[in-house]
Image (cartoon, rainbow, N blue to C red; front, side, top):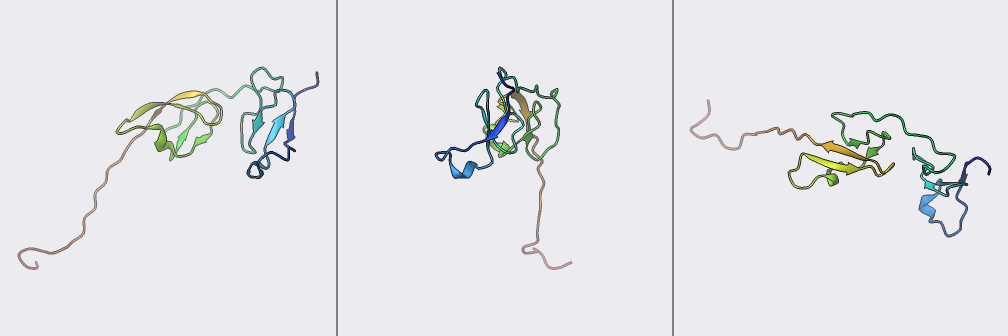
Length: 117
């Protein structure tokens, strides 16, 4: 069997909005242009992900396994939960997720009572 490689998807039935996607010649996995995972574990083209790494104080959740940013991170949390378990939309790995909420206050004058000072 030849080594696995990625090839462009040339299927007229493939949706036009997915242009740039590639498919593995061996495991047939589809991957987006910015994907970090291109093959299944059983494929000869499989490249293990780098060691997991913690991420703190980011604007969106970041998968500690593959490093991909999870868009719309707020959807992982329910109600006032501060901790949850999330599943990466890119590599499928699970990870613990926490959110920290900061509260600030603002004020502006409306009407002063008792005259000006």
